[in-house]
Length: 582
Picture: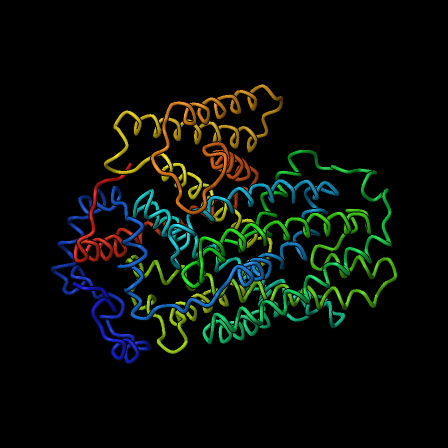
């Protein structure tokens, strides 16, 4: 059965855009009757085997899959737009809220090093994303990249975490928006939240302002991508001006004793624990990669946009962290609005209003770019029918995925209404680090394996090398997580990683050379990205992993009862090849 939008006319797509019929959500053969569905469930094992090994190809993602949205997204973006989208996507609640939280409770002044560590990890991931985004310029971002290189099932697991990442990230920023809005009005954030004692402690401060902000962002995101870009561009310039003001003004009140008296009070474990949470401050650049479908010249625009925005962002983060730690002793830093309170503490009450305004501007642009990015992820996932194809529809007039945008922002608003920031930031970091690790693995597969060309011997060497790289990285993370002292075991894990990466570089010839732009120092750079992402996962708290496990279980339940059968039917109807996985 053809998927929604494959053979429909533009007029039909417009008429059905807001419909909610069964054909919009479950049009596949397996769901046409109870008999069909029962038959599909009996074939779950065979279907899973088929989809687990199935890999898509670049041209199929770029052409046939993209066509399932009915209408094309408009190509209006340049590298200049992408740089400002990147800045707008990243500089928000991470630096303005989490810096204070992690400096006070986890790292002390050494939070500066935490930002450097998480920034290096993010930059390595940026390189991996950039090569993929140039060669597969579609709205699906990492979901599409993983479908091509690691297969349908891995892509679905990543897709579920991508959706979780965006919903939680947007909710966290919206909660932070309320905190700085309260500061602007000389109130405590909880003054604007509704206390509901019937809920658990981390979920009993209901935040109606966060819901209102998300709703307004939703309207902006569905109207126009180029219009959103213009607003983001102006807002981000104002935002950078305020960041420069914070750095210069704050440094005039610096006291070096605040930085040097007790630089790392919580030790190395505190630094890495903070880095794993502060990775949240760098997420958002992956939203820029989802805009590849709307860029005029992906080969030029994407590298300049992604790498340029991340370089600027990392520099701003480190300078702002240094400024905050010089202004106040780490144990006096406010966890909700650290910069505003720091200026008040040094007698510059007037400056806190500028800081709060800048923070609100930054968080607004983060929410806007996140809304644009998350809708495009869901759109491409829906094109494969892993989620209902209703979400894949692109409006003919606006050129934006309205259904996906509204759904994602409703989910974000619900989470933001209930959940505290500390719960959101930790869970978000797990999903993000997990996805970035998978993208780095996918890049190694892309460079070293081409179906029908790579020999069986080289294929086995590739699998063995990647397996050992992952094992060494996981071992180091587990040693760190359980608190093993001494350096010998970590050195051993590093040597194993080094040997495995060196073996891949020496013994396995690259099967594909990028035509336009490629990640340098392959396999070393993507292998390092795998190692650092997994190591940071070892610094996240246990309760966050419990929530992650629950979410993963829900994903698998949905997949085996719905997503697997829908995508299987769609692939068969489209004549997609199967069974050529690594």
